[in-house]
Amino acid sequence: QVELVESGGGSVEAGRSLTLSCVASVSTESSYCMAWFRQIPGKEREAVVGIDRRGNTTFVDSVKGRFTISKDNAKNTLYLQMNNLKPEDSAMYYCGANPDRWYCRDDERYYEYWGRGTRVTVSS
Image (tube, rainbow, N blue to C red; front, side, top):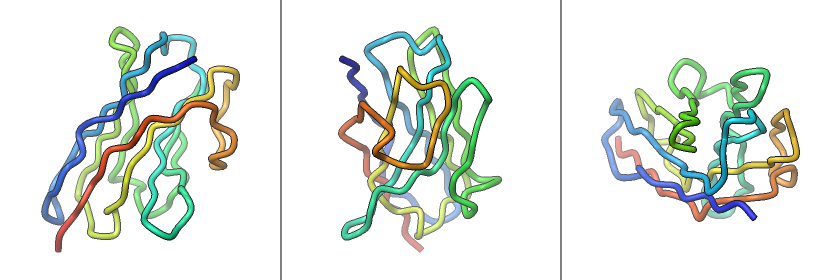
């Protein structure tokens, strides 16, 4: 069983930055797939960016050059640095993980463990 706890969400103005964190209850050192998803009411959860043994994969074109995923294995923590935020980035952000997979996919069904989410609201 893996527990994931997100934090760092908040309300900011467009153009500002936020850094989300996701602390895992198990070691993140083995480079299994971990990813950030986001969801707005009435829509499916959308894969944003993942990190695995290949490196980083961005699943959403609109965040390329603005969002960066990283990991601190000493802290078992996954991060999402979000720069130049836009109102369309407003969503609940979730951390997902699958310790049995080396490579991330953009399908939420692929992930075995989820955090409860942290909300990001960007005003124009």
